[in-house]
Image (cartoon, rainbow, N blue to C red; front, top):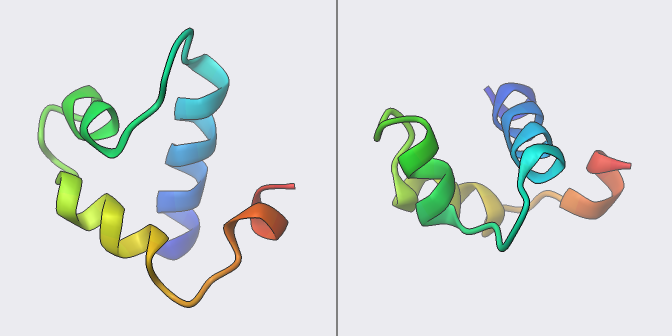
Length: 53
């Protein structure tokens, strides 16, 4: 699940034309992935920067 969320977030960043937010990602998925779930993912014990690159 971690890789799926990371892939989704990377695609969201690549395809966005303005600011990116957890709320924006939640809206993009029609609420399938909640704002809180995105926040928990980024507040976890993973190093997002290294994983994205």
